[in-house]
Length: 264
Ligand code: HPA
Image 1: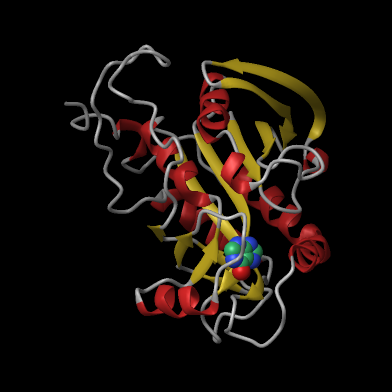
Image 2: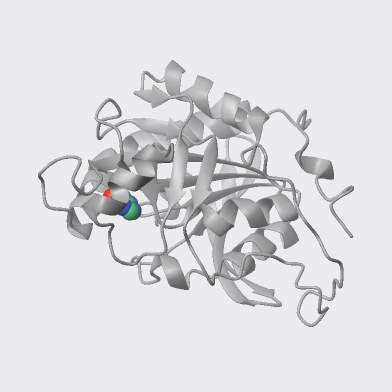
């Protein structure tokens, strides 16, 4: 089964045929997902912010979400998200296939392996490799699909993850740009890290909804982000509908065996 995690503005399971709402129980809490079909593939759709965008980035139950997908048998996940651009040459409307991240969050539960055995029942100490955090095979398929559809794609991008829920200051954005960031958002970490711990292939397409704070003189509002996402929802849906059937059954990437050698 494949998984789609829908970010801001992508809450509706309309891309699935025969969508059915399901509640999945995990050691971290319950998760609402939809299961259905895209092409001939079984797909689970999980709206990251809940129905009606009711869960802010710092309160998303990332562990429960990835655990739920894993327990449904999901082996590949495509995430969508809205991002601000740190670069004038990456304008709003660009779809960035993320290639790396800088993590500025703190305090988010970001591992299944606490070393206590109390929740997951796994006592192991694990240091997962994140040299190349996003699945190279899935990234390639996403990129080729977007290009075939004529979407404005960027083939790589460093995602700066901020804690939210506030937007950034213009000084922070200047710093992030100097550190090598390309786009900024609030949700990709720890989502991608947990997917790796679960040995799930994970790729993310980030839609640029705005220039980040201070890059343009426009005032930043959440309403604007949702509005731009709303205007682009048809393209995002098309990208997913085109990408999922193109994913081959065989995983030709390091993701299926990431825990090998990671456990202490
Ligand atoms: N900053 C953080 N998160 C975002 C932004 C932004 O500018 N735009 C969309 N999500």
